[in-house]
Structure formats: structure tokens, C-alpha cells
Length: 140
Image (cartoon, rainbow, N blue to C red; front, top):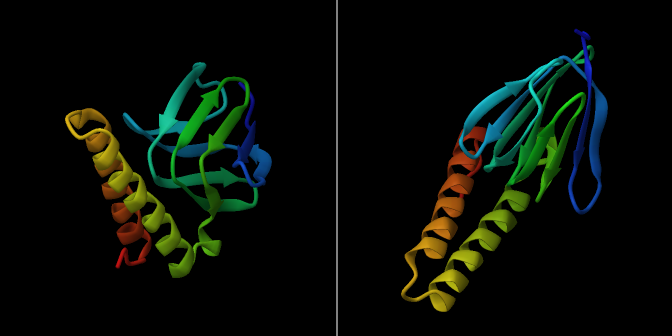
């Protein structure tokens, strides 16, 4: 088993990270998990959270708002939005919260008698608010 694996984190805007890693903690939609070299191949969806990457340079955290992670010989994360934790500002977080609130309002209008999509949008907003609390940012 190799000591490292290739890790790539991309969002629609840019490639956020590409490096050899020893472990990555993933905020999976069905629960958090850690991917390491030799991990069984799988694909998982992401919930809003912190993606924590361990490499020879140390640990670096990234904020992700959702997406997918594909684990195999390497680990590729395709995030809806992703940025290094140290680049997340209150202003950026407020924009993300505003988008989640708008999505919830749209779901309420479009799916008046269908609770599933409205519940999904409400859960996303709740996860975003919890993420902010975890990293010390306010949703107000």
C-alpha cells in the first residue's frame, strides 16, 4: 500500500487543490469519512462542511458546500463551491447563506404540495448555518 494518494479538489470556478495526501476527512451526506491510500473505491455525495486534508506539508482545511467525492487510486472532489478555510470571510459566507435562502424560497413556491424538495432545501440551509457556526461565522 502506498503512503500517499493524489488528491484533487475542483469547483466550477477553479482548481482549488492538487497534491499528494496521506488522509482526507470528507463531510459525506451520509456521514463523515476518512479516505486514505488503499481505500475501497466508492463515490459519495458531500454535505456542506470542512474537508480536512493531511499531507507532508501539514493539515489544510477547505470549506465545501456540496458535491461529490470519488475515491479510487486517487481522490477527486468535485465541489459545488470550495475554498480554503482561511479564504472564507463573513462576506463570502453571507453570500452562500443568501443563495441557500433563495433556493429554499424558490422550492417553497415551485413545490407547494411536495414536501421532499422543500425539505431538501431547508436541510441545505440548516447545514450551511451549522457550518458557519462551526467555523465561527454568523448566518445573520
